[in-house]
Amino acid sequence: MAHARIIGTGSYLPERVVTNRDLESRIDTTDEWIVSRTGIEARHVAADGEMTSDLAYHAASRAMQSAGVGPQDIDLIIVATTTPDMIFPSTACLLQAKLGVKQGAAFDVQAVCTGFMYALATANLYITSGQHRWVPVSPPLFDILQRSIEAARLSEGGYDITIGPVVRLWRQARKTHQFPDSAALRAALARTGYRYLRLDTVTHSVWLEKEGMRLDVGGLGKGFVAQAALDLLRQMGYPIAMVNAGGKIVLGQVPPGKKGWLIGINAPGEREMILHSLLSLREMAVATSGVGACAGRSTWRCDLPADPAP
Image (cartoon, rainbow, N blue to C red):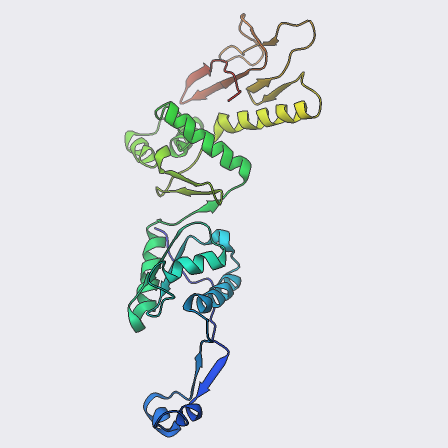
């Protein structure tokens, strides 16, 4: 279970100060009367036009600086106040815009003096339940994840990048030469499902909704890298090229006088022997899963060639 902790704090007070002596000249009261009953000697008052969201902005900015985080790291904003800038939109939404936070939720809590405790308790529940765990990723990885979700939809889940927990079990089985038991497989499968992989296209952030989820980019990642390398070669003026990324091959134009690139596939269980039939391809892609032994059984598969162009 995830745990919440305070990693940074920040505060802010308006510049204008009103003392008890100042109040004596305005209303029927004395400094002694106020201090004896409240202990207050002075208070800070917001300037004309200075709103609650402005005060919150300064305090939140200092808290973020204290924690060493930026706007891209904030997933949830809760403002506890009984003096909002306006009823709608919430002060939290206004603060979100001022901080430059472009992802996550934002809302107000109105519970007068105890508002802070309610806000803190609510934030703790969001964190410990895993409701807000957005992680920014690089543009290339985000592109791969978008493509993987599209592939999962087109295949109705036949391809699923969230298969990581299951793949991890099989990798362990290859080392121990023992199949995972049914309970372990059920537990691993319960942590999969591409529909629980959330993407934020504005901030290029990712959220794995289920606890224990793991991504396995696998062949799609290799193919993406190989295609990117081929595209770069084309841009540099080398359209005749072949890129092999660990069994994921993408092919450009063929050499002059040739009908296609000849691709050989290793025979199952043989490192130096290839199958008699060769593939002749041009401007396409081909992938194999390789040869491996899992729990004493040999496995092999060759995917069909496919046109990599969208």
